[in-house]
Image 1 (cartoon, rainbow, N blue to C red):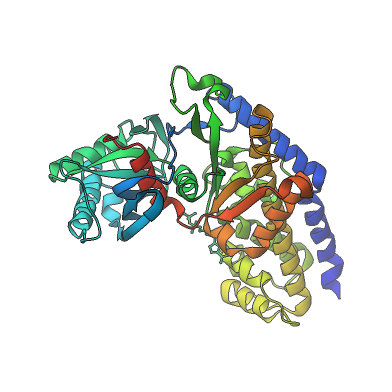
Image 2: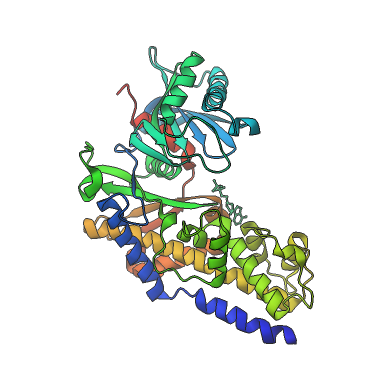
Length: 461
Ligand code: ADP
């Protein structure tokens, strides 16, 4: 068939360019470790921002009392309360709620937005039932997970650099978002205050650490990606006077900006050039959920145009950017039928493409190539972090049990991706060292983590 004659070379080239043999993985891990070090030395010293979280005290498991969490990172905000019972009783009760932010508030004033959030918090706290107890004379303390770029200046304050993700609220940029929320709560007469402002990765680490003292790293693999880890303060030259009583602090790596030595293709470069942030977040664009489907789509378009993958005519719909999404890849890779019927129906339902078995096989190969590269590079990044920690403190990581807490829809739902990631970690570390490494899905996610950080940084201790 003419199909294979012209498609196969394109596929082979793609596979060659996306290959991640051990030396490539090793280079990425080494470069990640080196970039981390450079980012810790000075602001602007590296692709990796290595942001100080000001989280110096991690949950120990003995926290007690009633704490709240507020998570603002997209078009919904989530609120949660948890009654912590200490070492023995642990999480006595939790309740949560989710509120959609009306479109007009995303384009309104800062006061209106924070008033709306405060009002949601107020309604939620009014419904506090008998399982929850606040000691008299205390305010309800909130751990605030805020997933927009902030310049943090202490555990309970941070200046908004800019809104992202469709928010265009006027009057917040340059202000302390914690003060904005605290003021809104005061306006409504709420007895609540923010005691910890945290990034979602940091909250994930805290949530996992509550259950397991060996958690040292947290990684999010969802729409985007990020990682944080526990660092020694004496290994942070840029710390500049900040004192941590524990001698440790969490560093938010913002590793999505990493770019050193990644195996990239023409499809990556074209996608990057067409993106809203060309030249930025290259690692994120190679490994995270928002982009895997788009890279596959671009490869399929080339195969359709130059190799007649789907016959003589080019399926018009397939030319739509971001038409193919990562869950579609996942669904196609799950297909174990002889005629790849599911692959056929995804192609048809999503892109209006009619496909024969040969074409379907090629599509699965393309999905696998991009997913494999993504998963394996994510694994190399994790090893890079572990390597950096071990270099500074021999025996801290290797030779003892260490846990990496994972969260995010991509990791959770895409089993092939997860498998490739784990495989790369084992390849890099060898079976001996990997035996002590536990990479696991963090059950409680970031919600409880933020509440725990409010507890660990309570103003009443
Ligand atoms: P977010 O990162 O947007 O805060 P999640 O952690 O839930 O939220 O991740 C959502 C992302 O996970 C989606 O953008 C998608 O890329 C990926 N994802 C969701 N479902 C699946 C699936 N079934 N298979 C593969 N990837 C998925």
